Length: 138
View 1 (cartoon, rainbow, N blue to C red):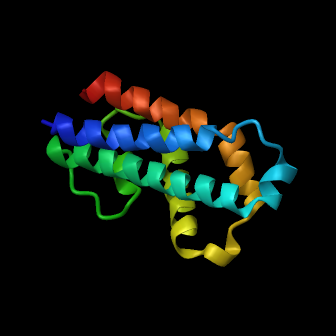
View 2 (cartoon, rainbow, N blue to C red):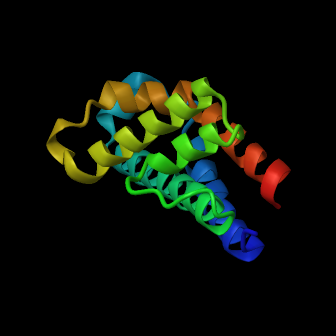
């Protein structure tokens, strides 16, 4: 059984990071590319949001005795195997782990156009994950 308080704390941090990113939803690509502070805020909060998703997924898997993930993305695969996530969701969340790794380790190689596209068009996947956790584990 999951520790609901641990999950709620991480969901709160995830939601906070998402709100910080959404403050900039109305900016254009040009504005984004010209403002390194906005880039930093969005990249950092994407990093935190994805880390919270990984933490939550790992807690769910471990606390429910579904397995012991050996990689950051494996918890999503286990949730897929246990029929909590479909194949498409699993692939999206595993790609997010890849983005997190780039944000964490490849500072000089971050394509700002890709970050812009993600924050403008893909935050719904994070929101869907929040709903999934609330509906199934809170």
